[in-house]
Length: 121
Image 1 (cartoon, rainbow, N blue to C red):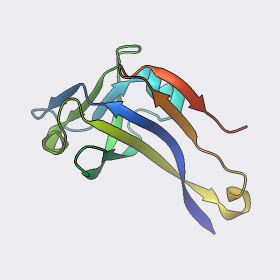
Image 2 (cartoon, rainbow, N blue to C red):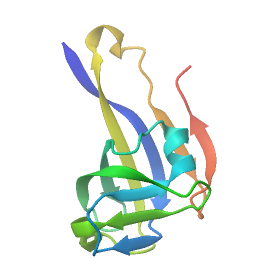
Image 3 (cartoon, rainbow, N blue to C red):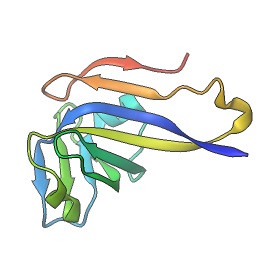
């Protein structure tokens, strides 16, 4: 059996831009993606802390160190600049290793700079 577990989380990143006239996706500072272990084009779930919106899209890399979190395309209508988001990625994990599985969690400051990271041992 395989279980769907949280693989990675960016906790309370701030939306820096919304781009309606864009193909879609969410552009995230490449450094944050790397810290969390989220790959470009990987499916992500976005939870807006301010308005309760929840949606699925995919990650693309923004310039490393830029602090950019830009929600693009149709999803841009679901968030506002300044909103706090939780960005989550999930993985299928064999049940035999689920008890020892731990996600990577990245906490950020007000400028979307990593301030703390929890990684599996």
